Length: 126
Image 1 (cartoon, rainbow, N blue to C red):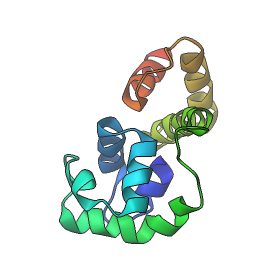
Image 2 (cartoon, rainbow, N blue to C red):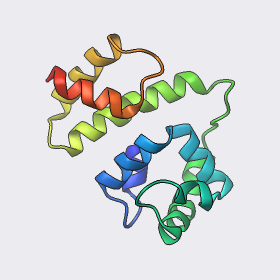
Image 3 (cartoon, rainbow, N blue to C red):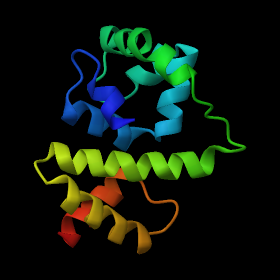
Image 4 (cartoon, rainbow, N blue to C red):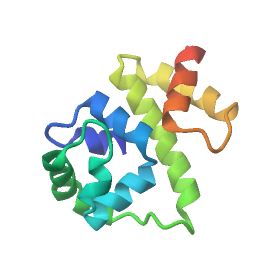
């Protein structure tokens, strides 16, 4: 999700981190697929134009994935894991070190931890 967010013009790494801190990846995807600009605007740093741009550029990409609650848990966990690695890479950490830190963190963290918590703990594990 992190890489998809930063692929949108005007959305940088800090804005993507802010979005993922404010909402779960599946909530962001659902808001984008449904075209819910109000929900996206509720995130700090996202205005009306940015919300509309996110919807236009990502709706088709995210529409291919199913984010329903029935099978969403494993895909969300995998997404959070991957997003954490990409966030660490965006902070200048090498991919092998980032993957190792996130893997160690995922073994020692609760299932309801947010992306922000995972990134913080992974940084401590470096």
